[in-house]
Length: 479
Image (tube, rainbow, N blue to C red; front, side):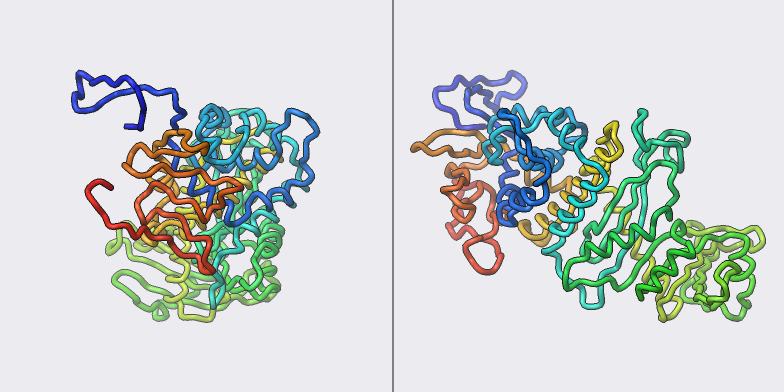
């Protein structure tokens, strides 16, 4: 129950132990988002947006700056907005604007107009700068990052630009967009992403996409391995990876040529048993359009009688087995290569977070560049929230989804009161002291949240970025 003075309270006939009351104080259910604001201030996100959106300045006297609109976009997605119209509920929340330090929260039309000002050049320049900024705090990997390439389908229900019929397994025949994404496996980050029309194949523009992705890699980081599915089994893509000296493991399409020159050329004595019902083999061979260049193929087959749920391709001329063939430049044993590629399945979890936790597949505008801009800015927020989860929250939260962060950290009720000529936020869930909202005169280092000690924000006054702990003795009054 929120703290109220001279408020009439009534008991519910259904729940007599619960008191219901009403107050004129602004109340919000998103008080926990103050942690995200403190984190954004610590990484100086507003200053970075000022530099990135310098070409989006407005002249109207009644304007909401582009930086404020983009921050409103970030906060709205983090709080669970699934449509542009959902931002209206955050705009009407009087206390939320005070907590976030935003004078006027952008309306849905304001956000649409901002994204409609993007063209391809502006989308690329802004996304490159902000995506690189979101990756600056990630830790380098000694042997290099593992880069996973994948694509997904955003189903559309209209006649937007680029919304065309193509590969759509969930709703065949429905127009869609076909975005392409590159993930850093160990860091659980998104390195680069772009939106494409629905009739694009997985490998369309993959070389240009890799060039842009490699340009965003932070200083001191490098790519140690590239993994991709059969959609990227293209000669020009393999040649580009070899020219950049990037090790790769890519699933090969089981076309008639591959079945004839790879699977049928492996003698039965070459297959090695690595587990019950699992056998591997490898060989070097050149396909007809490779002009004599030999590459190594690693073959994995699983016996269906021993493993009835084994994934792979079943061949008519090789009954009783499922097959998977990979082309690779990695010099390790065949069984090691298959295990190295198996980790790529985690990229599906990243795609699930983008589509289900941030709802990036539901925001669509008439202009293709505007839709692409909204999608890429959502990808920037994904990296920022991933870094927020690993920096501010305890280690046990590293594997939690972004939806859990929103439901258990951001979803906290609070009341806005005035005390001693200072605007303060009173948490109605815990019997704690009212907390001062950080302003320019009150830096984040002086702010303490009304959460339990494990949710306290970092201590910005120290050189190292650690957690500030509450050293007060615990009493029954605090719970």
